Length: 75
Image (tube, one colour):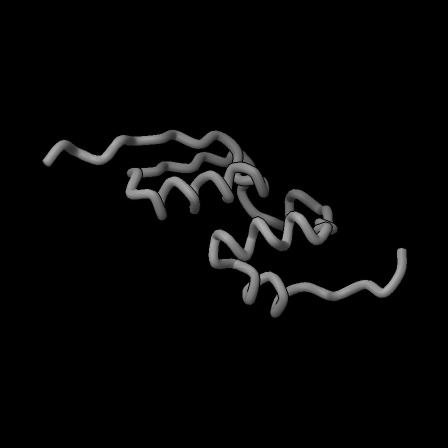
């Protein structure tokens, strides 16, 4: 059996983390790199539209996102 392919992901933003999870679920060896030392360094919130929530659901993260987030009725 050949070894699993390896991916190096640079940046642990939402795109990098989604790629890390998706590739890991597909059997890849994944290493993710981020230069920020902590989340508190970043200082921003993230607003997700329904299509982003659908993508998180595909990655198995919808429940976690719902538990940690707040639903807005209007903006």
